[in-house]
Length: 216
Image (tube, rainbow, N blue to C red; front, side, top):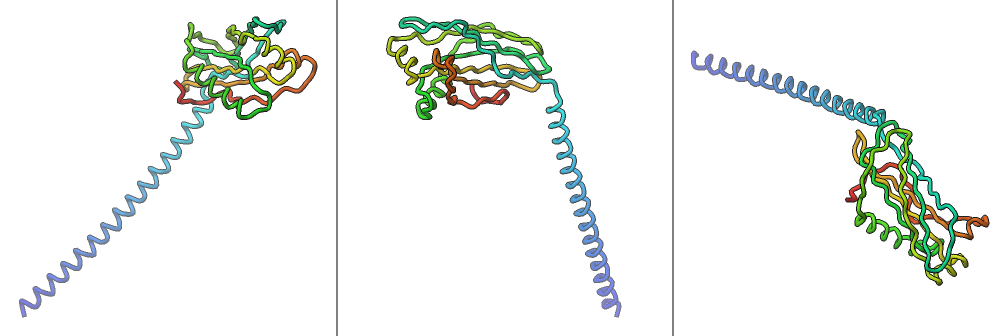
């Protein structure tokens, strides 16, 4: 009889222990899920807060460049200079500003040849030498002078016949409190035909005034 009672008692103890362990497991699982949900909520809140801070943080920004070509004269064996002015329209200092521009002959409205010009410009950008990068405060401008290709007689005839046009590419690299940024711009220069009121031609690269890049 004593052995039977002890067996019943042990079974009751084992049952109580199992039920208690199951309750504890459910409790800790619920706590873990609750903490996990809280952690995910905090992560999302922090992410949104960081995005808000990033959007409202002071930043430098370069808009459309001003390109001044003066009185362009097209003649065989000649080239002309042009001034490119970049204005910081943001609310933070643009640091280590590197402005680069190149001008190329290209077929108007020809996507394939324009893609080649884009690749050529990227190559020239990577190999160009930065000369005294400057800081540009908000509302201030930086000016650099560049040169067109030298014209041959064939170039002069092609430009005048509008079978070739000139594309001017520019890229500005700069830094501010939010990182390092790039600004790209491209436009066509159909001289002297363009002054007669003819429409311009699409440029081979998209305009982007503030973007991140892996370019060196």
